[in-house]
Amino acid sequence: MGILEIKLSQNQYSILIKRDILEDIGTEIRKLYKNNKIAVITDSNVEALYGKKLLKSLEKHDFQTKIITIKPGESSKSLDTAKNIYEELLDFEITRGDMIVALGGGVVGDIVGFVASTLLRGIPFIQIPTSLLAQIDSSVGGKVAVNLPRGKNLVGSFYHPQAVFIDPELLRTLDKRFLYDGMAEVIKYGCIKDKALFEKLMTIETEEELLRNMEEIILNCCKIKRDIVERDEKDHGERMLLNFGHTIGHAIEKYFAYKKYTHGEAVAIGMYNMTKKSEEMGLTEKGTAKSIREVIIKYNLPYEMPDTNIDKLTEAVGLDKKNKGKTLNIILLKKIGDSFIKKIDREDIGEYIRD
Image (cartoon, rainbow, N blue to C red; front, side):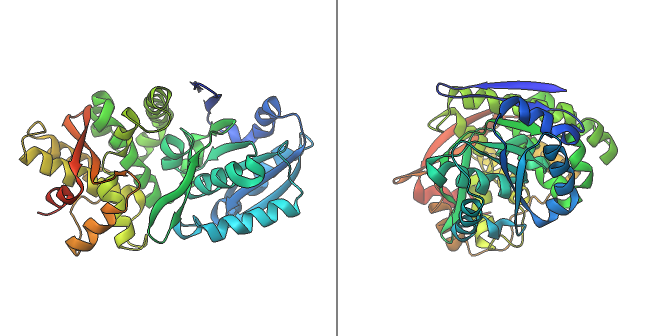
């Protein structure tokens, strides 16, 4: 079991990492929340696996519950879906003294956090992430958002949960593609801050060994993110390092309408290709891109840039929310475990994309 405390200037909450915590989640929530009404928001895939188990645990503690289900997938992270959730929550007569629970992966966590932050000017919520990507990244740090047709996460806010409860055993039912999707973010953490984690990933031989080590992996990743978020909650400086691979990755996701590549797959492509270019420019230690390519392949992720219209891809990069006027902050590596922020002119991003 691992417990991390996130201490911010105006907020503090815990991340609890414990195998099979979902079995007794009602006990954990009752420690934090003394009222009775809880709205659980999830997607249809997760509800089929864990909805009854969660509701059973909550009802043992006399919580009055309502479950709201959305379609799985990135297309649900929209203002239209948010509007439907608002209506269901209002039908449940939810108040600012009640609680919302996000049970699901990154899409569910993001949209539930966005809804919680905006409905009635803020309702408390709890994250129970069920995917690896959500457990190590999106459930931690308070970034909540929905997408627009123009790009990903363009409407959102910083709104922290009351707690994050992480059950590594949930990953055993995760579709294998999405297990490895999350491994892209694990690789990212190793690249930007933790060489030992990166090297550990290269020693793991089987999926079962990976799952046995998952509690430690999740804890290490959450520690890195916790430390960065505490120093830079609103993403003005060091927190940008967490976007390694994401500038190109988000553009690839959008280019293919969020259908061809998962988030992690697109980020893997971004990490390798950005590092390959920065190595050619003499900004990164020789051999770094090769090491990233090897670990990406090991975890069944793509690394080659897809066949795209470069002008349209660079246009998608230009619409990324990380743009600062005519400049763009990109994340590069000096070497594995040592990253830095480089400010470039917006039009120069093509140099990091073209072969």
